[in-house]
Length: 150
Image (tube, rainbow, N blue to C red; front, side, top):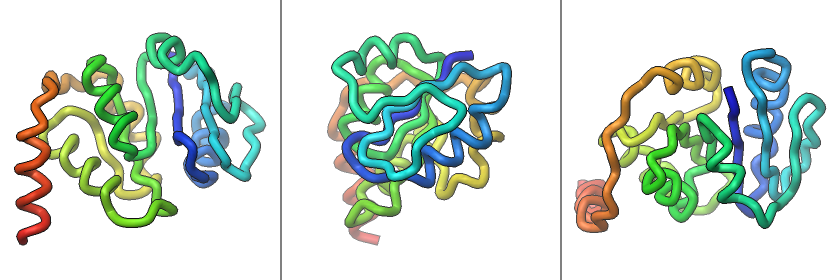
């Protein structure tokens, strides 16, 4: 099974390290990672800091593990890609957490609050059926408005 990991332009060494050490040594997974500015350098997975071929790598993957960046998450959802969202705690504000909650509550993807459940999430994601996402910004706006006004 092909797994692609992307952290965008941010530093998210913990995610890269966890994927490398926990998943990178498992024979059933072929893992590639776009590691951005991460300080951790993988030992067991193929990696690069950035690529001009992101769309190709996403197409190649059966499952994508991503930070909670809005652009990346919604691109993956529009492509109907099986996705695991792991919000980056190094990013200011809580927008990545809110996006992760939105995709999880609407069954568009799996979202993790932390990385402890990464292996279980990967296993679950293989066979899970997700709702199809259509680009309706009203749904996201309403969801975020409810969270802000609680």
